Image (cartoon, rainbow, N blue to C red):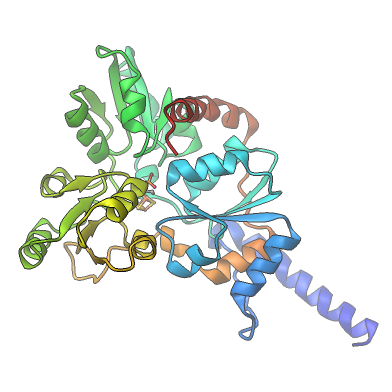
Length: 348
Ligand code: 13P
Ligand code: SF4
């Protein structure tokens, strides 16, 4: 191609890119056509190598994303990985609070999220203004917040917990210590009951875990009497009451590979079933059905990530997670407490 034509094409491409960048806050992702002949799997691998980038994926991502990722984990495992990685670029195939936590823990790295609008109903339910007012009503309480919250809420919290670390962290607190737990009322109620601790709960919930149909699950249990029903503690109490095992995402995965049962009804986001099947290819996994007409219970936020968005995000290193330094430092304190206690307890 002659130099002039090449320059013209480059100019058009950079004009187009400028427009796409200007659209980012509204659209959430780089919306560009991709050459349909490209093998995205290969291109992503190539770009990762060229840029010394790492692709982290939560267990709730689609199978294709999990397969191209460098590391797959639950919220705590991903935070632990992000904190220690020496990659220059972290591409987070998860939701916003996860990428934000990675940036808080490892601020010299560039952290990008394929779609800025990949939020979380729990994080959305807990806004800093109302939460600060709520906190004021309980001045002698320690604030424990589930990692599924914004940096602002983390800055208003004493401890961050994940579903895999919450019990251990609560058990480090004196028995008479009063506790506020936010933002998940279901996880809070489960922990409060299990650990015998009185807790003031913020009234938030996960739209994915709250929508399981007890009636349909019970019918499935009747149809599959040998199946073990396993559930994430973000589910409602009525669903947890009929579960054979309750655990965090990684605990559920471990349980299915070590338990002797060969059939499981899985009451959590179905993305995890990909890893469960890989770990136990001879076992059967039945996703627990929701209480609506939908066939699946996918998290609409987690599923905003696609191979196309990951490719463009890796190529253009956008959208980037940017966080005010004062806010980062304020939020880091509560996350650091979780990281320290988890490390001491060997939770990973
Ligand atoms: P974990 O990955 O910590 O189990 O959390 C589940 C979840 O809903 C993440 O958004
Ligand atoms: Fe949030 Fe629930 Fe989706 Fe997890 S599964 S990101 S808690 S909405």
